[in-house]
Image 1 (cartoon, rainbow over the protein chains, first blue to last red):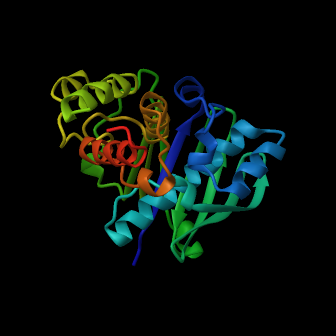
Image 2: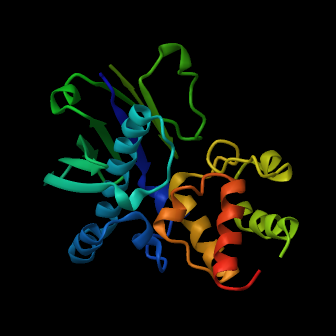
Image 3: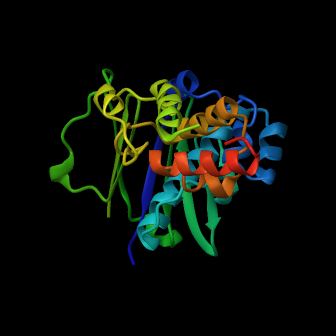
Length: 159
Length: 87
């Protein structure tokens, strides 16, 4: 089955909309291991949203596969294998399924792709566009495989 | 606490996270937090935390899994209040 998911986080909007330092917040979205890594990180903000976008991208694939809609971000366990400035790879495990991820990050945004097979990640065409006013163009006719938008960013992927 | 009162207190909470005023005005048990109210999924955690504070209950991650619409949220709040002996 050729399935993939993607997720984009506009870091400026995330900072405005979401206070992950709120008491109890991280416990609801992260596993204990992830919480520990965030606590030890020199860039905790980036790590929180990297975990989040990996989880969201993987969740999109998983819910398509299972046909189930649930809200359990903490039960999607992320593992980061490489983390360079600008680029990260890893995987997300949930209910005995594994989704490989690759993420692009900079000071403005984080974008993650997830797919059941690592080889599929290389075949995905990604188009990220910037829309200052938050009004996105009509993309439906291009038939994207997965859509994510947040703040000024629209991310479409094609398989 | 009856359903109407629960719903009106829940409405106040979600109004902080939705931009969709029309869906908020016509909020009912079938209203979906993500699809109808367009609450972003990172803010759904805030809704859960606000519900915990507002009603003095604790929502475990297993209950949170189902909290995607008003009906499920009301059921969870009712169950937790019942468990705490505060109906």
